[in-house]
Image 1 (cartoon, rainbow, N blue to C red):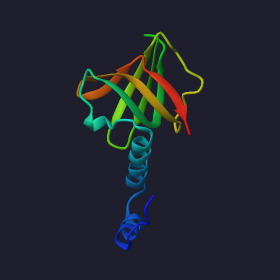
Image 2 (tube, helix red, strand yellow; image 1 turned 30 degrees about the vertical axis):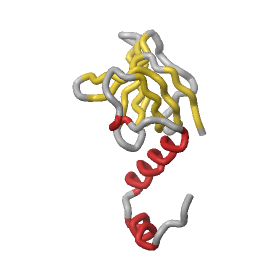
Image 3 (cartoon, rainbow, N blue to C red; image 1 turned 90 degrees about the vertical axis):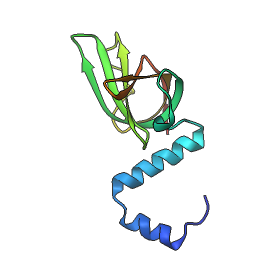
Length: 118
């Protein structure tokens, strides 16, 4: 990584933590060849790298949902027929593969493949 300029160091010193985290997520995604959500077209196969924000289970419908952010946007991951996945926890970094859909103006991927990444 190249040496940061003085103005970049000052900007980072006063930037909100959320902005710095989003910047780091975008850099990590670029390093592993993943796409940014905001640049993906609906109905396309995508590879997204991000952090799990939340995990919820809808036992009545048999769905497990996780919300993941990649630093540009959030995507909802939905597994039908699953009530939990042991390794999927908030704060974990994941590499997600699947077909991107839009539901009520929000990104969603149904039954995605995923890997836990460092």
